[in-house]
Length: 155
Image (cartoon, rainbow, N blue to C red; front, side):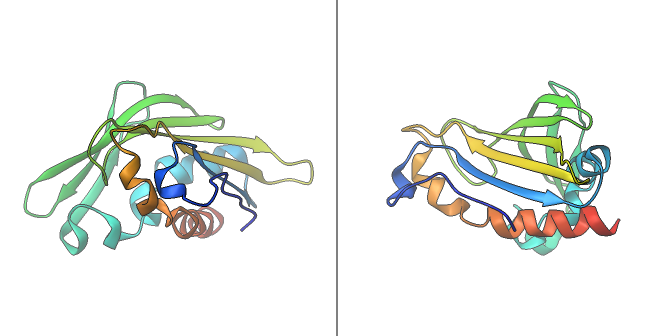
């Protein structure tokens, strides 16, 4: 994966956004659809609130909608609220699945590559004194984004 993280040593105490870039060999529309509508397919089931008891992840891609994980036992866990959803271009939402304090913000932008395919720019920001202790637990984004890429390219 072509990626980078902007954090420096001591990143677990940083408030800088976690940033990654990757190239996906599909159109922007397909890349966006795979990210948003395929979230429950590419997200690692072990990294959810319900683990093996997960039923589904619901994403309504419009501002003000929620991202909700549903357990097989009927329980729900809200992951965040959609802030921006422009098909083929941008998807942004708050995120508080793994931490207390203020929600963080995940933003994913999709750009055409000159040779075809899509550059996906990922940013997980909004870290502050209320939530930065959990920042270090997000070192798994490269693994999740690689799962996303595989899903996008093989749907």
